[in-house]
Length: 411
Image 1: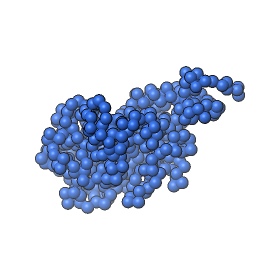
Image 2: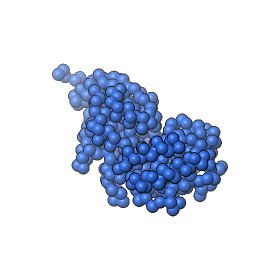
Image 3: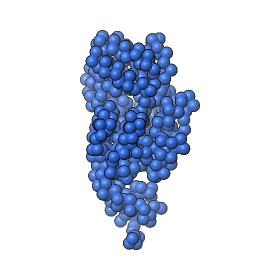
């Protein structure tokens, strides 16, 4: 191997491989590592073809990753979780990674469609939040994200490297609903808002929300909405079918843009929602809030899983590590999500970090409907994390869920 010449930091940054070495090594101490240069050169021969929700599969982030890593090319495909799962299980070889939600991991793990990523290969893993390494004693390990992403109990290999996570709630129009009316999962099913409520098309999302509402209404007493029994599924689906037949739902939404348009137009005044969609509606100058449900939030995490058939495994590992590096987390944090790494704090402006993560008032010029002194709906990350009803998980009765969901769709 030829000797690597000594270069100035400016010269290094001018070259793609040098920029990659910096990005992968975390700064000056890594500049003399031949391994970094070799890996950067190898990445130039690989592609990154990813599929997942538009939440994370964003052209801007893929372009930034290509620049930072030196990977030969990037391509992203937006698809719902059920659609992406179907493509992968059918043997599609068009993708290198699935940016999936933790609850759907078993579908590809059990069928040997993914390969675990060693944590030791992720240089940014050291600053991961405890949520992804330390189980919360109030739930069984498998009923929370830390029990879903690891291949082994020693926590050395990951089925999914987390990229974003959040605690989901209810989006509502405050000119129509009061806080008291909106701060419960029953709001989505309240006859008062018949024909103007919305529900997500993913059965694993819709089912848990229906159960939370039924528990509050005294119609059920399910302990874990993320993993109901067959009988509990049957009761919840009967409830959903009855609501659908009564005309409760304006739409069953599955796309971010669709959700935003329905809320901004006023066609939907209350629905299960992603917080960034609420922010997008507010940015249009339309009234929209994010509820603090008395029952608690739905918790989830999306991350990068390496598809077993991929010929670009180094590119996938680099992409997963890039999500934890800090900069890509700025984009999703300012949409209303959270980054699983504390690296975000070192790259985000302190006043922005204070608003999005620490429950502090907005400082500075108005931005996307946020004005000086405003607070993030729900408060700080710590406050919201302490008010979780359940984490999404793969239900033991998944086949029964899908069967009953098909009946709901055709009702």
